[in-house]
Image (cartoon, rainbow over all chains, first blue to last red; front, side, top):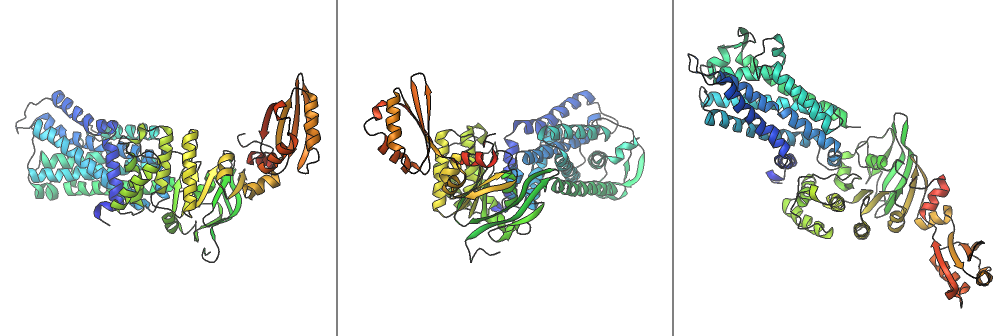
Amino acid sequence: MTFLENKAIQISIKNLKDKLRHWQYMFFSLLLPIMFTIMFYFMLGNEEDPTGRTNFDYGFPGMIMYATGIGTMNAAISFANEKSSGMLDRLDTMPTGRKNVFLGTLISESFFLMLQIIIIFIVGYVILGLYFEGPLELFFGFLVALLFGISAVGLGIMIASVSKNVEIANAFSLIIFMLLAFLSGSLMPFESIIVYFTPPYWAKQIFLQLTVLGHGINDSLFSSSLIGAGAETIPITLLGGLLIVITYTIAFTLLGILVFQKKTKF
Amino acid sequence: MSTNNNSVIIEIKDLKKHFKEVKAVDGISLKIKKGELFSILGPNGAGKTTLARMLTTILTPTSGDAYVNGHSILTGKKEIVKKIGVCPQEITIYDVLRAEENVEFVASMHGMAHKKAKGKTKELLEDFGIAGRKDWAKNFSGGMQRRLNLAMALIFDPEILFLDEPTAGLDPQARRLVWDYIRDLKEKNITIILMTHDMVEADSLSDRVAIIDQGKIIAQGTPPELKEKYGSDNVLEVSFVEKSELDLVKMNIEKIPFIVNLSEIHRKERNTLLIAFQGGLKNLVKILQQGFIGNIDEVENMKFRQNSLEDVFLNLTGRRLRD
């Protein structure tokens, strides 16, 4: 069996074709974040502070988390559709294995997330000329955004598990996604203790401090404390924050798979 | 259970599936032989799909067990799914994939090599009259989507094929195409389990039929056996303008042994003779030969209602299949 004939790879190829051929997916996943980025760029203005950074330089990491957080909606709709169309049942009558279904979905979602992040990076850093520390910091930021995106996929799978149909999954995931985007302060500053309970906050803060405020990967990760909701520093280093994002990602993904299995095995 | 020393490929033992108070399947036991086309005939909601879903390992039974190709549906899922093809009642295709992409995807799930899958897909789609369509499956007509649904179940040459209402919603021409294909599959010694509420389909395709109602098998046998045992008589209805013509025919046939009843209806200028008889079409020919020599031209109208599985169901349950 060649690599391409692998079942998980085949499922991910099928998922990607499915996404790329649905204009709704493309609009919500790619065009909407671009529209928001450009809108916020003009809203926040490009007046530089004494360090040479603009308001939008500080706001852009939040936009990236907003864009990758759409993975919640994508995964919820995709799994709910598979469930309600009977396709999941049909796959269960083939020697596919749920392991390959989840793995294939994780591969396709990760691939799509990468595409989203790259596009938003191009819009932000290439077209709008936003500030970033260096390529290494940006690459690290990319990985943090991807990690957060995978946690959003896990959350989406959970939502699909408890939703009766695609419409409910769509509405439910939109509410959760928007709620998380606002409560985490990704779209606009939110000074509340609530932010610490939202995964996007940690991902956005690490990204911001690494790529906009950072002074090199080593210092940022091991020495720098994260800046809290009220602009004060909190006793957690960026590495600590990264561990929180990883924990969220693992927990959401496993929980998503477990709940989905429980709700779809009769 | 082994399938080697006898030809039973599916054995169902007191299988039950209850959804809270609803007994969808309520203690079914059956044996299906290898290479047989076995129909489960019943009205909507009788438990056909639930039974199929248990046999194809999607649903776990409340109690009981079934053995598919020698493997228990409770413990042998991995082995069972390698051998079965399933064509579900709902059209389950990926709507933004092309026909060949849908079929090739299923082939890949069965571990078929890409090259082999491509060749077989082309062949199948040609057989089903959907080759050459390059647009997405969502643009296909309902009939084409249903044929694609079936093609997806056949791509890997399954040993056992589950067809749940495969011709539902098809026009007569497409229905006949699918029936012909099912007959061809039977020639290839594939065991086919057909879930249907269509008595004509069950009658014309099946080796044996089990009639299911309210989660229970109420009768089983070959279609002629069932009709013989539980069916009604065939009825030939002949109308004449002149009563004397009717009397003549009546006299000619009244001593035929397989005729069970002769009755008359007289309305205005129409005299109708109802001839109820047992047996098949051969007996109909005998009645026509013996009763109508010389006066067939006097017949104003003739209707024939053949004993069917619908009658069997009606006689067993007091309801029609479509009720």
